[in-house]
Image (cartoon, rainbow, N blue to C red; front, side):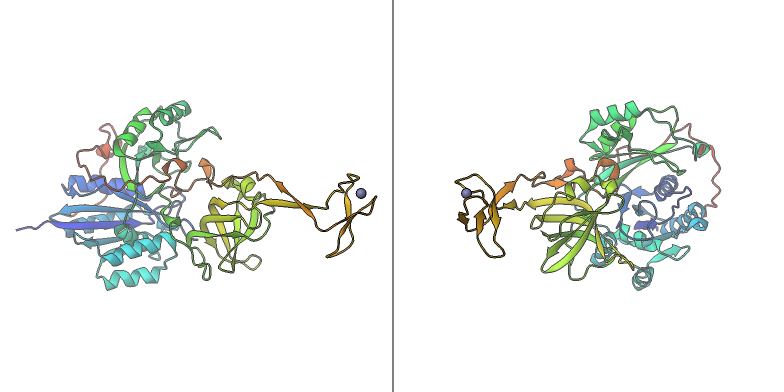
Length: 456
Ligand SMILES: [Zn+2]
């Protein structure tokens, strides 16, 4: 008698600059698993990990699947074949796949997922984790992909969004994508705020399509399954895509910036936030970037606001004493630069009064007075009347106590958009009847002979 096992499948780092992409591999694997008749227990997860690590592939995204099957061994074997076929190891991909066969995910897996989100995990640590837990796994290259593979299985959502990713027909890979701009704009108008980051009104730019040679046609991000499907239907293009898959994802949740960084031990490539007071006047550096320092617990933290974020104007108006909360990642120190926090959001919590000191004006002659020297009186230039101290005038501040985010085009996958502030999705159950996976019948994938030897 065969028993049904619950199988968690995690994989990562199969993509490369030249074209392949982890989510496309997931689409192919799900297509295969559907043919095998496995039961899906949740939507596929697309987990974005720490965007501030040095060797990330484009989006540092890993995928996890949760299925019920009576033939786990056969499925594992075949998925490894998919990884082998669809990974571009010659172009620097270091793919990894991990299988965990159990219903419940243990706490130390969750902890691993949390660490992969905010810090740098080296491949030796994950290899130890895999062997210690007796996990079936497979990797190519240096095995860095195992980090995301374990992390995605262990990832615990306290908030999530969805992304519907549509894929191109293979015959169109590498060709220019044609998507009608007006349709994307209209789609955003009709579905916002249940979809997000589709169109940048300020820059008149489509945000749903990548520019590279990868198989992704476009992606619609949103709050629920129905909204992303509706969004997809509103996007117009002369190109027919192959099919689509909807992922449950931590995109748009800001999850990597939720923990406070330890200012006494700022680890390179870690992500989080720091609350403190501005302690040096912001300076504009070469390239238009703005650099300043903040202080927390007598510890100084250097902060860099890069020009593409669109936050430099705001940052340059900070003054000493402002209480701020900064989210971002720690850049490693170089020979010339010390460790620095790359700013991903800037929240002004309290503005210091900007007081400018003037010499007092003589109340008799209306003339400005002159200082007689340090710690001495001020004296009227005409009648010599003495005044004890400077007078202060308050200069109006040009920034407000609020949260400032980068422009839409500079958002990272994980950036929590303004309209998602305070919003949490964590109660929706998996609904197998929703059309979360779809391959068009006319698509060439069905007709194409799989080159993978499927063992039965
Ligand atoms: Zn006077």
